[in-house]
Length: 212
Image (cartoon, rainbow, N blue to C red; front, side, top):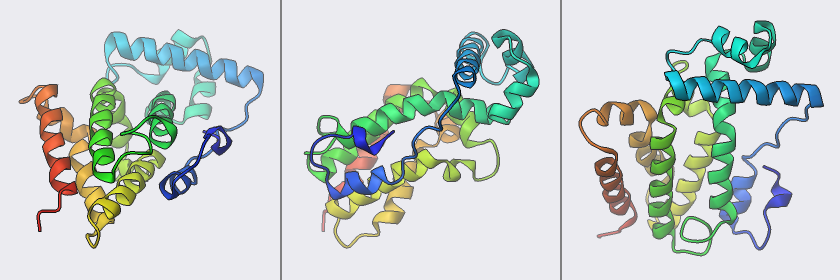
């Protein structure tokens, strides 16, 4: 996302978060066409067969591109998954930076934390299989993803405002921990999505409410 697309006054939070966003790389027209073909093929196969069951060879065949082209562009399946998630992440990030409150600017910090947890839970449940592959590609992969740094910084800024004097950086990690795709995948075997969302709302409320 280009920072120039964010209109209107920006809070310190918005300016800080914008610095974490990188502009998409420039592409030749033929490279962009190939990327879209691959992403559309991958999305179709993942939807029909599940992420785990689809090989990179199958994606290359469906897209009509060479395996070498696919691997050079995306590296491996986790890289391809990350590319598919990119547009979805950017949409949520734009809503946080410049959308209507309470998810966007203009609402009290505690309300924005609750709104983020609700919005992210919806996003997580919808794209759970993709997020799980992306976050577990290698040990600690989740914490190296640029989107995680964005979510963490957003929450840390809001929690510092909602709970002055608290360790906001740690609390942001703590709130994101139960939003890990691997964790939610396991929990959904026992709890439905509505129950997970309700529990996360209670957790967010506990973190932003100072009962001292």
